[in-house]
Length: 368
Image 1 (cartoon, rainbow, N blue to C red):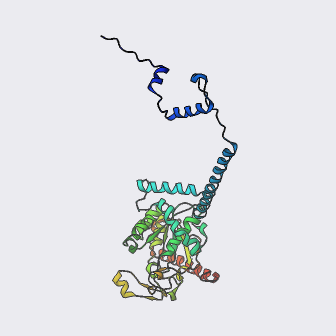
Image 2 (cartoon, one colour):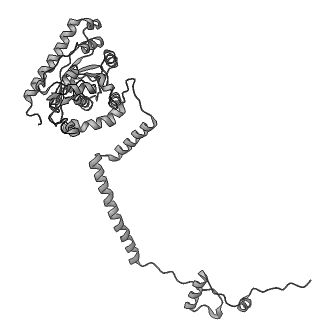
Image 3 (cartoon, helix red, strand yellow):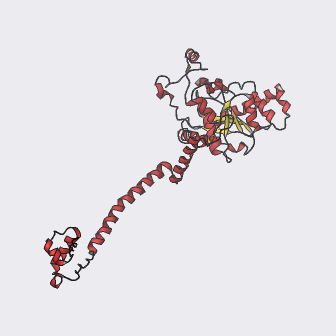
């Protein structure tokens, strides 16, 4: 077997192979060596080029550019924050977080509804927020005597009813919710028609309204709720403009009997301003029968202006809660005494009527 040929890896061998074209870092190193002269004899350690310091002008220029770029970003952030403060008010970030948490509970179903369908969280966060601009800005409602509603326990608020549409009940609900020191909720008793209308039925239940019947009213009062009733019903809501602020008959006094059975105080409530929001100058009875409504209002703007005629006039409102009429000194069986029920019903009606006259005398204008 022939001896293997040893190929030497030395400088002479590389010289015999020829010089390959340097690439990459080698090319850069070679270029540097040629520029500095290299070491004698072509061997030895290659001198590395000295590090060049970054000029101070370039460093300061970079910092100035970064500062120039951050200035408009900061200004834009401040401007957006200012817009959010004006639209959402102070602490808007907390409000946004609270709103997102509310939506999460809605999606996951993590909220409570009582056996009447009342959704307290939805009422506080959504429904009251929708009604509040009408209460504060549009109708500029002035509330008096709110302290006459007890801070705890049941109470029956009895009010006049007017305006073609039941906006007076909704404004009374906002008045109790926003102005009572204890932030109480008014549970209104509504007519059957409310609970057969699509969408209105669901919203009424969510807002805490229930059917105007003695059983539901008594159950709510026994639970310590503030219940609102408008005994005039459709007779007051759909009366002509010529009969404004003249109370209609208060029914048979069923609300008084309920108050006597539960021993809760009766709080008379007088509302001025609702009569003029839809001045009812006519009633299309034939159309009302076809639609199944108790009346079909005709005002100076509706139905002549179409949907625009549904916009209420911006009248100035006053809601006054009178001194409570106690019933706890009567025995529960007093509710079956028709004479007592009639006398208390008449007392409540006369109190509301006289208060309306006083408020009308004090009012400077329908709109101011």
